[in-house]
Length: 122
Image (cartoon, rainbow, N blue to C red; front, side, top):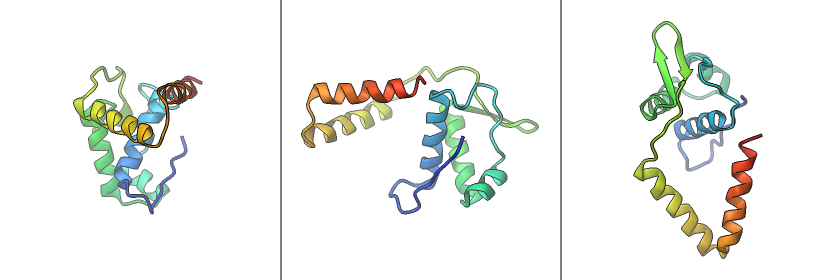
């Protein structure tokens, strides 16, 4: 999985990393049990601070996407995350509202969501 960072984005780097790993898991690019790079290795490869990588890994662990072990390091969790938090639903509501305000119709939004969902199943 190739990670890319937008250093000029308003989205913090740790969230960019977290989001890319979540997408990788959802799309099957990262499979349960797969070992993730160490914090140091990922920081060196990507050019971001080790504390930034550590923060992203901590969030992923809290959310249940990865598990950590002192000997094995960080690995993709074996069970899918089954809870949808109120925060996620709120973020989705905001994004849909932004699309509506941009002039998109319900059918266009649903078609776009379906396309994105299907791209993740390839």
